[in-house]
Every structure is written in C-alpha cells, then in structure tokens.
Image (tube, rainbow, N blue to C red):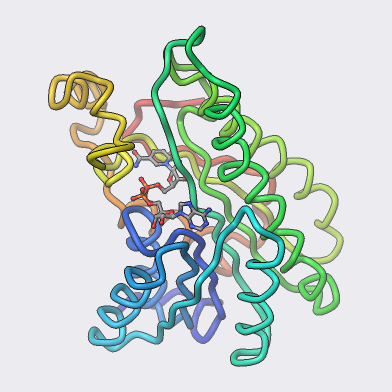
Length: 260
Ligand SMILES: NC(=O)c1ccc[n+]([C@@H]2O[C@H](COP(=O)([O-])OP(=O)(O)OC[C@H]3O[C@@H](n4cnc5c(N)ncnc54)[C@H](O)[C@@H]3O)[C@@H](O)[C@H]2O)c1
C-alpha cells in the first residue's frame, strides 16, 4: 500500500484502463486507497482488471466507455456519479498508435488518431469539468508521450495528436486554475504494452520487431524501458496533495531519454 495524502477514497476514472499503462495506473491508485473506475471500450478486460485489483484489497469497478462518443461518455460518467458521487481525478489515458511514412498517412489514419488521442481528451474532460468547477476541486492528468515534445520519423500523425494533448493541457490549466483544478500531462518514454505488440495494430509490426524495440530502448540513460507502474507513480504524485501547486506541466517519465 502507498500512503499519499489526498488520494484515499478519491473517485479516479482512468480511460483505457483495461490494458497496458492504464492498468498500471489503476493498480497504483488502488494500492493508494483510491476508488478506481476503469473506463474502456473493452468492458470484459476492464472487468478483469477491476476484479484483480479487488482481489488485492483495492476498490475498483469497470464501466464501458468510448472516449470518441459524447453519448457513451455521458452514460458512463452519469453512472459513476449515481454510484460514487463525483469524479475527483480523471486520467485521460485511452490512446492508439500507428506507424506510417509521412506520404502514406491516409485521412483515415489521421482522423482516427486525432479522434481517440486528442478529441477523446477534450470530450471526456468537458464532461467531468462542470461538476469539478462547481465543487472547486479536481485533478486532470492526460497521457501524452515523449512523442508529444519531439517529432519522430514515421509518427507524424501520432506526434501531432500528442503535441495537441500538451497544448490542451496548458490552456485548460490556465483557464481553471482559479477553480482549484489542476491539469497536467505525463510523457511516457517506452512501455512494452499491446500498443507495441498487438498482432494487428502493434507498432512493432511496422518496425522490424525486436530490432525496432531495441532501437527505442538502447541508450536510455537510466538503463531500462519504463513500466506501467512508473506511469502510475507519476500520476499518483500529480493527483496527490504533494502536487497542489503544479499545473500545466508535461512531466517526462522516460528514464532520461527526454529532458526538456
Ligand atoms: N506504451 C508506450 O510506450 C507509450 C508511450 C507513450 C505514450 N503512450 C500512451 O499511453 C496510453 C496508453 O497506451 P498503452 O501502451 O497502455 O496502450 P494499450 O493498447 O495497451 O491500451 C490502450 C487501451 O485504450 C483502450 N481504448 C482504445 N480506444 C479507446 C476508446 N475509443 N475509448 C476507450 N478506450 C479505448 C483500449 O481498449 C486499451 O485498453 C496511450 O495514450 C498511448 O498513446 C504509450
């Protein structure tokens, strides 16, 4: 268990929490005593994660959520409000990727990434923000990427979406600071999840498998790729009272691979 002030009992909605980084964030918040809600397109997987966390003594539940649909978001958040009161902490984690040389990016590739990775953050945040403003309390944390601060070859559409998350974060942070709501992002380096390995969509399908992974991992100053739990720790800090004076930040969690 973690003892971090300002987390126990906090209703924490993690989008895309059924897999990879989101599941790691859920695990860390559950260990810290938060009331974790896993919102995901994949409801079965979200239930499995929630059951695992409950088995470890945490408080967790699952809700079906498509971050690209206002109707789905409204239904999910209304359910959460009915059962738990309010969303205290929102972690915008749901995201997708694909690797394409610039000239081969189709409009469909572009639109899908922007829809899930950027518009999804807008839509879910808009839904939870009203009650946060009314209560003058809230924490919003979005998962950008090291690709949100530096362009990477063959990932222009992904990078554009993740740069966008940081712009949205900085703007909203200034807009709602007076309401006692903080808005931050974290920028993961490389975490081996289905985003890399998925048989259909995985980045490594396009990147020469293990050689591609090695190119991303070699030379990380702290000597290892990141874990989903590393991301959970960063989010936990930003959600805690320890970070009450931090807003508009985009925190690297990349083992020193990115330092600006
Ligand atoms: N893995 C990495 O190395 C890495 C690095 C930097 C940033 N990120 C970011 O971290 C986040 C999580 O990535 P991951 O590696 O854990 O991926 P993942 O594929 O393991 O998990 C993504 C989750 O999001 C869900 N999801 C997808 N579309 C959704 C939608 N429309 N509505 C709700 N849920 C949806 C999926 O069902 C899945 O559970 C993403 O935003 C990704 O861009 C990942």
